[in-house]
Length: 457
Image 1 (cartoon, rainbow, N blue to C red):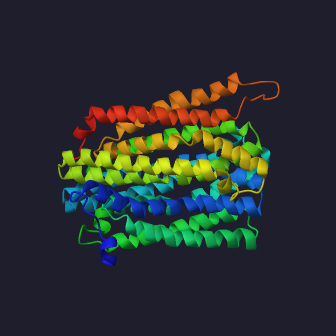
Image 2: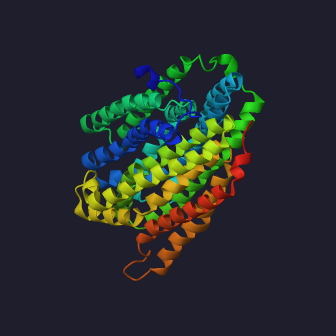
Image 3: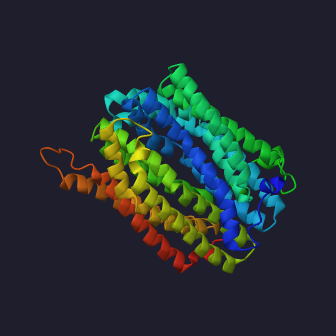
């Protein structure tokens, strides 16, 4: 039984909902563990350094997410290609896909470090980052960027493992790294007094460890594919397919992160207290979104394997069952947030005004998690089938054409002498509108069924 947990899962057989659930649960635990990285950072910073340091870490996150979109794209493309080739039992193509992903990731890391390093502080200035937190933001981003190879390779290699149907191994390695991250966080900040820099360094070290463990696991899976330098030599066919499939996913995240940065500029105008509240909300939000992201990724692998095997009726059946499971899970989380939200906020800070503001913002967003369950699940199906363009366009419409104008529009319309920048609720309301519209558009395009014609084979 223990050996079976570490083995790739063939999701072309058995009851769809059982396979999806069995695959999702380890990945959900793993995603929660990964979210602990940033959450523990925030707890340690908030409790040991102060609210301004908490705001510094939070303000850095949208920029860090934007810098890492290259790897999100590679990971998404890798997941789709690996799952379809695995479902089609194409050993040679599977081997070249995995090897080329490793090489492309190394090149992307080098490009990112060279281009992004000198731009970090000017970008923080451009975004009106308060003087009281700009140095902390800059230090956190520089360390995270220079050590980002660990995060990059964990995302890529765990995406490959999931494409093979193995979500358990990635979970185990991430749990090990999370424990290390928590221990180093406390040691660097509480014992050595390293501040924000210690938090970033702890996360970087933990992520490098998780990526090394994933690489060792892949090297031992030779019964399913070949792993060696021969397959790491770039091959245009696989690199082009990886870019074609991964680029829209990367652009989707880039669009989302860019919108977050634009909105962050508005957020910064509301002062340090609201910035800190926004950080707390993002941390709780990260956990609330985990089931949605987990089901979405599981359905990407499920769709990829079944499309590779030509089982389209099975894909449709799994989409319905997987989406319902995601919706029920999100509804339960929404209830928990509304009932126990303030208790969750107090984990991060003892400042009562900050707790109340954070809970108020979270209560506005709560219903949106159910909408996101639909979006992530059906987008996962479309991506797994090879249609990565449709989710990208939906993200472009909702985050750029809808969210940004709504946020700035509400801010402008609510300006008063007492509120020179308008009401801070504009941030949460614009995000809620974005989520709901995204769910509606995703459902419409899924029903149209053009994703059924996008297989890579």
